[in-house]
Every structure is written in C-alpha cells, then in structure tokens.
Image (cartoon, one colour):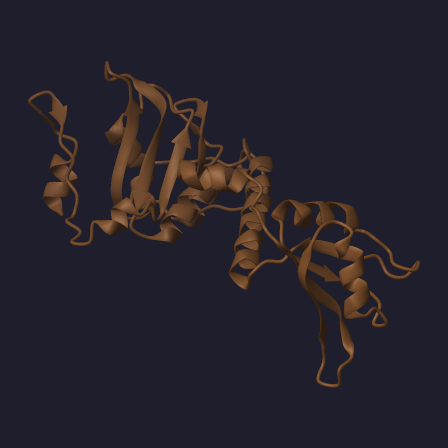
Length: 259
C-alpha cells in the first residue's frame, strides 16, 4: 500500500509508471463496470492529477487522460472504480465542478455500440394496447390493427372469470407495420370510448432499464441546475470535519450540504 502511494506515477526513463493492486479476474476491468468519463479537462491535468482528484471516492482500477501522438491532453479521460457506488458518488459530487478553472462533465462511460443501440429505434412486431372497453372482442381488436398489416395473433388478457382486463397484445408479421400501428393508434378512441395507449410490448427487464435511464436523466438534470453552487475541495487537513468545514464557509452564505 505504501509503495502504491509513494511510487505511483513516478517517472522512470521518461515515462510515468502506474501501480495498482493485482486483480486476478481481468474481465472486471475490461467490462467497463463503474467506469466514468470526464471531459473538458484543462490540458495541465495529467494521469496523476486525475487520479488524485478522484481517489477520495474509492479504489481506482484504472485512470487515464487521453493524449495525442505528441503526448498532449485531448481534454478528456476515464476513471474506473472498483465499486459502482464510488463511481456514482464521484459523478454526483464532481459533475459540473470547476477543476483548474474549467467546468468539467463527469458521467458514466457508455461504449459506442451501446450508444448506437440507444440512438436507433428498436425493431419490434409485438404491440401492447391498454385502456380499451371491456366490451371489445379479440376479433374487433384484430380487425382494428389489421388495417396496418398482416397479424399473427391478437389476444385480450382476461381474469379468472373471463372478463376483459382492458389490455392485450397484437403481433404483426412485419415490424414496419407494427411501428405504423403504434404511431396511428396511440391515443385512439373506439366508439367514442376511452383513449387507448398503444406502444411496443416490452419485457420486464426492458421496462426496468428504461425507467432507470429516465431516472438517471432526470437526476443529471437536477445536478445541472446545481452547477456553480457546489464546491469541491481537496488537500484538507485531517482535523477538518464536516462541521468545521460548514463553519468556515457559513460566512459566505447558506450551505445546504457539507461533507
């Protein structure tokens, strides 16, 4: 541990050496787990400065500032933590902070293929419809959706007594037909009755992932609103606790949190 603290990033033959604890399972580092992306870095920030900035949040598996062929910083870098909660804490604390007078962006790293998948509309044939009248039959549902293309099945979900539960599933042969049906029938009313919701049928895991992504987006939006009001400090003496820190800064205005 002492060797890591003292010798990490020491120059050997003109190159900074990197020391870290050995992990027998290399898949952890390669998986991208707890990996964060930092951009808008000042060009003076090197690997050591980046490491020192983020080390207080948890054990770091890897840390690198991207450089060009001449060794100059490209203004962005990556830090991978051992634990997911450490990465999330670093994002919450440092996103939007000033580091060397530059406001940095800190967020979870997303691989290019994952970004491409999220930016492209998924193909689907199974459609979910809800909020329709209990009087509608399977055949009526099939006829309504059949106007947009061939259908392989149309099922209304029912309770143990055979009563409609007001939602069902329609499966198309062609994904393009399914997409058009969703576009045209979402918000549709049948016989001036209830307003329908029509969308792509999703598995439980997909719905949970979508809700998580929405939560993260809203959370990041709230953090952006706080940019410029949150301060980051380092090199504090060990004797400075939360209360002492709050006392020091209280003369400049009301503090909502101090840690």
